[in-house]
Image 1 (cartoon, rainbow, N blue to C red):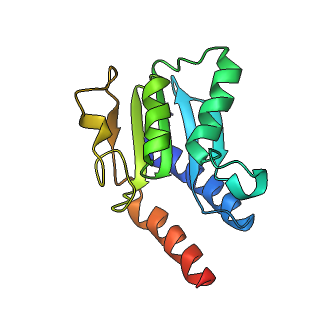
Image 2 (cartoon, one colour):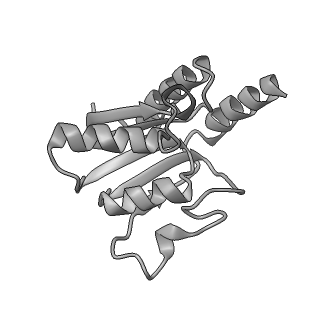
Image 3 (spheres, rainbow, N blue to C red):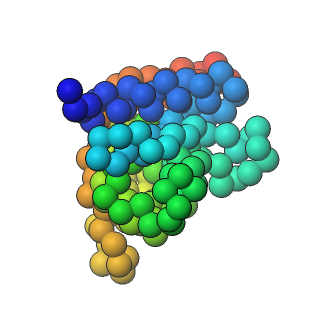
Length: 150
């Protein structure tokens, strides 16, 4: 049976929960090629003292190392939160074919919310995207995380 977008997002949610248990903002990411898991990541900038260690960047780095190429052509990236501008830039440069995200980020989202980088004319690669996959579950995890810290 071929996993669906929802199946892969559930896997990303498990990774987001792992980030949360480590005191990190709960975001998880899974990179898939030909319906096979290539790499995964979760937010870890606090634990690694690395401001670029967002879930997407961690997954892209692991995928590049595994595939031996910085171009991740014909891959799909699943992430529980709409990527920020840094992550969206990396996704474009990596040539990810398709992006699937859970919760939108109206304040910092760079796919189609605060910025619309998936639809700009100045980028030389267009990333297909689908937002709102398991949006309620993804959003709830983030809301609970921040409520516990206030």
